[in-house]
Length: 296
View 1: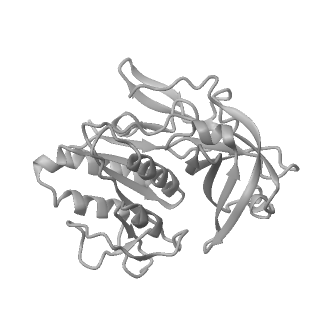
View 2: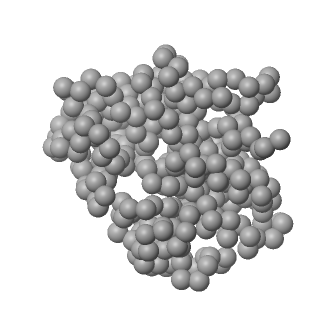
View 3: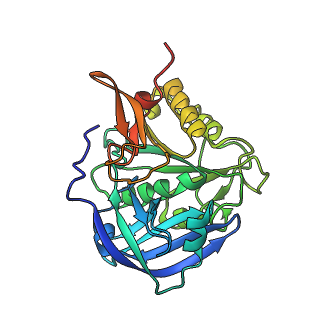
């Protein structure tokens, strides 16, 4: 995969908080007016936000949607500490410093237009962004399918899908309404027993769907995943099992998020051998085999 140059593509701007919606599980969807970030954002990139003037350390958060024309970005986050707690209390109209967009995004191949997008927990946002972007591209007959997993309530009101999806296990009908409205099929997985969801891991649901395809259909599939590391490792194994390429977006702790501190570096297999790559600017998206190589 060819990486984009990150220098000169990251902006710092004072964004205006347009809306903030709370969902169960201390999850929030926030919309910010950030025209520069919105114009340059790509699926898989993220923004570095100052959550409160009294907390100088920024928080890296994946972009869920971006509208370059209207100049806004949308972000899903879950409160896990004082920084995001402070962000959840910011009122509409507040000014929030945004640095972004940052990182190498997903790069789907037009040769494989049947894109399988797998998101787990706070790894859901990039999948929504990627699905929306594919619906607006005319360079291939894109057919995105979005599978999402969560062990807490999903950050949206689920409903039965209106889109028939062959290859799904019986009774797996719950979807994300926004994707359904776009004409993008989606299905949900959880061990929590939510109605209409697959009762297992989202990667097992992905494997079930892939197993329903013949060799001709599999040759058109590419897998994209974002979520916790164990889920990404499982996604890489599923992709190898079915012989489809896979790109994963890593979740790592970050400090500067612009490549200066190298605190988020991970080992990556390259053509020249093993190398340390920074998740923030060299990633967060990598080829799955490069970060989770098959066992020798």
